[in-house]
Image (tube, rainbow, N blue to C red; front, top):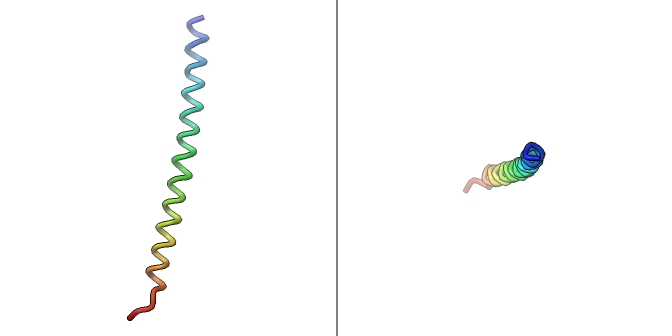
Length: 48
């Protein structure tokens, strides 16, 4: 009984970890895209 509960809890923790990892990766790429967009916007500004 104890082993069953432990393995179930481990699986639940593992799933939550995967979800957090996925969200973190998506957020990272979104930030990278925003930074790239801002960089090119600055680069393409006319020089005055």
